[in-house]
Length: 387
Ligand SMILES: [Zn+2]
Image (cartoon, protein in one colour):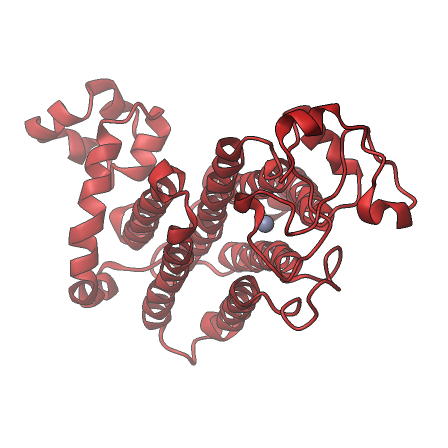
């Protein structure tokens, strides 16, 4: 490994693979082989060349325009970011007004697409700055990349749960409550308690915490003490408890899990390679948890023969298929495992993972749009659709 001094004084005439590429090479950037890069960049021995390394922040940013083994990774999620940004603007300005969307629809779509955009940007940041000369900086960006995936998963859960559990009534809920009691008991109260003490805007406190109407919640002096007087009087949730109780339970439990995963990702203790498998397993567990609300939703909707289940379930299954495929490519390092050194720039497993993640988010966005228009065109059987 060349020392910092040597690197500083060397005119980089040797361009590695670049001599074959008609691309602009900024001064100070050259490419290295797998053996030449520092240990923290040696993630994949089947990618043998095309590494950027030992760069300052400024050169990391400049390297976005050169061809390295990270170029496709950077640009796939940068374009992904622009895709979800454009979709967000289009949804809010053109799609939702046509559907006659309510204020909650706008909030849910904004959260979902914002999470996707944050996920994309964290990934771009990592692939851009992983070659930083400071290992600590590189590791920090890696932690942020993992945290970004947690945020992306939240972006899938929030609209899915919101529209799936749009109009469930109290009898169904009581029937199902027994099965899910341990989960509710273990996760929801902890987060609710935390949320009460968080400086959240009033609207969010009402939306997340206050399940009954404001008169009811304020009737107890104990609750009066918990919720400030102005909050109680300014809360006028548009639903009763029947229609959205399960939504709250799933949203809160998913949020609790993702927060735990998020803090596990960004804690320096977990930055080293030893924890990489555990982190991947954590994601599988959180993604797998989604099966629970799915089964619950099928039961509440009247079983597999129900019209909405037949329409929406295949979309959920395709989503899981994409997720499983993405994780398999990510973990197995296929296809470069079978063609070492031949897929350094194009066609490696991480690039396929990136592409599948964008495709998965896009698929889920389209599925959510379908469910939203279904909810607005098919009023809930027992409760009128809120305006
Ligand atoms: Zn990546």
